[in-house]
Figure 1 (tube, rainbow, N blue to C red):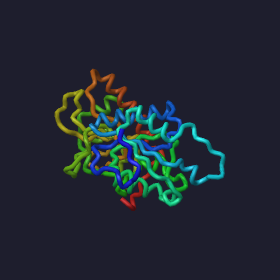
Figure 2 (cartoon, rainbow, N blue to C red):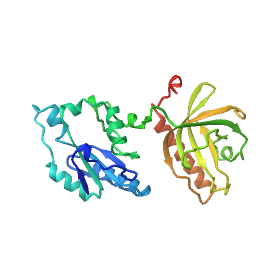
Figure 3 (cartoon, one colour):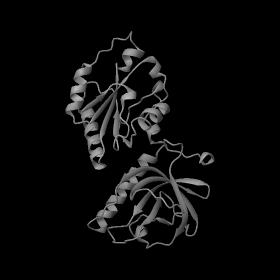
Figure 4 (cartoon, one colour):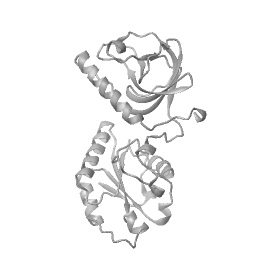
Length: 275
């Protein structure tokens, strides 16, 4: 494991970094599970795993009068993280000045600009940044000010989605550049209204379709919109496109995907006036 103790010492062009952030005191089983997921996600994209922590512990700086005792020494924590198989440990010096950085600045200037983070995995209740304003919902927001989107008319498809119980809008996008094939949690913009949805981009390998399609399932929506224009805003990638052994397995996977999209999209809003 390579340990980096200054932000300025972070190497340029780390290959596809997958990161996690935390104080990791004790490096308990929950931390180890997060590290395992980070390593796996890094392997999946041929990237490197990065753990980001702080020294000293933020409470030692922000609340020195409190009787706050750590489970492990800092050197023990480093050794335990190294034993978990993480590639890089970024140990950021913590000070009152650093504590004044907003969560948004931390994401942009350190996670994105310095580390080049491609994916992050954190505990559901982890908070960071000034006044603990950064959380999983902030990290799900676009780092470039807006979500990537594509748009185009809805055309007639093969009706397979409806037969599976999940009617889809087959969109012919105007854009030349599309996201990587896979399943995404999306927001669908139609006639001035935003709806939650799930989108599949790919070649429908289960049916050996052969042609690249963009299919959006709009949650809790039953209008006939053939010939109308949609814009699909990509919020989070769910999984790669896969070939299933039969239609039953495909239907189960779609049910799981839709449930995941509902959970991810809860609390995610789009401001059409700023898009």
